[in-house]
Image 1 (cartoon, rainbow, N blue to C red):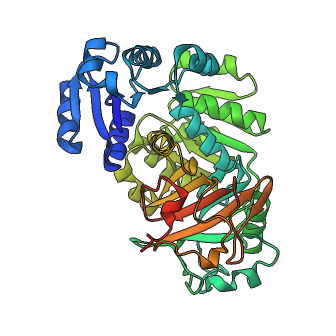
Image 2: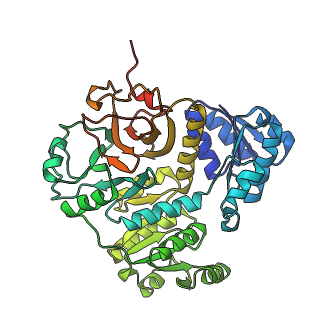
Image 3: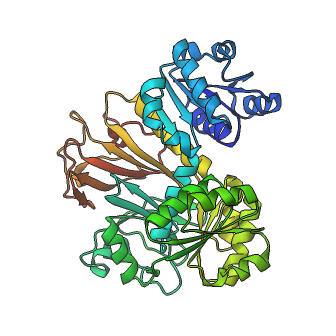
Length: 455
């Protein structure tokens, strides 16, 4: 597809990298010549030094013939206007990044009246992911499929875990009446889509699919269930903190935000009278201690600087038993964070990239089994994709054990109406089922692509 990206910030460059890797024809518009020089050299794309609201610059980038335009500039209004102009020029579909809560409330209007195909909000998506982790604190990371009917959780096998040394085919005996499937294992630098004879080891990071209630039962039976989180300390009062505070307060969880900007503190106090807003430097250890870090159930580092968030999280780990969640946008820092024992990392730009890659694949595959959800795991080396099985798919009605799947592909879940199936070899896929596929084979666009090629 021909795709135009407006804005070469963190999100824009991440999108350029991901979409170019999927062989799309990419053009990037940004007013900063250095950004354009970097992007064209690094990703081999067309770069236009200019404005996303200039029809001349948009045409130079090919917007008049583009299949998709993604507006990810720093200002919401520029993104909306860029999409509106691009649609008039002939762009087939437009996605705008919109972060202001006041504008987010008008999403339906913007879609209908301004011709936006979709609106993405990295800060809201990041807050939603953090909220999911807080509600299931035993997990390092928690994703959901089919509107929350099936969870995908990442956990680490700790010393003396009943999972250490266990072959996967023994799981049903150990966790009777618990429906779950271990669908990916990270061991050192290796990523494995395991078979039944695979043996788990201490230190493995495993990805488990299960219905929500069964996942809770799994944590309890293996002794890693964590107490319910009732209080959260947040450092940084930006947009993620705003959305997160609303979600947590609605769930009955108390929130304390430490923010250095007085004006922002006033805004937060007005918006959330039930939250406690502390105007101070959240990187000051004395303030963290005096405000009760040791007693917090969860600590969330949301400053605008990745390195600052990592240091804060490391300090919090030494001072409390809180569930620690860290915002990190630079992929190069992820390994560093994990190596110091901080597990739960959230990246707003990566979440946005996942959503837009999902959308782009769905647009390309209008006639096949559509993609409704896509997550990238383990530094983008694993994909978990939710397909809607359509009439005519090659896998319909065939027992899973008889399917000739490609290497490193696992069907990790089937959702049929309101029924969640953690599949075994006797199960079959029916028309309109949601089918969860976990694989190291990236770039699947259609459910039938998981099958071996016919000879």
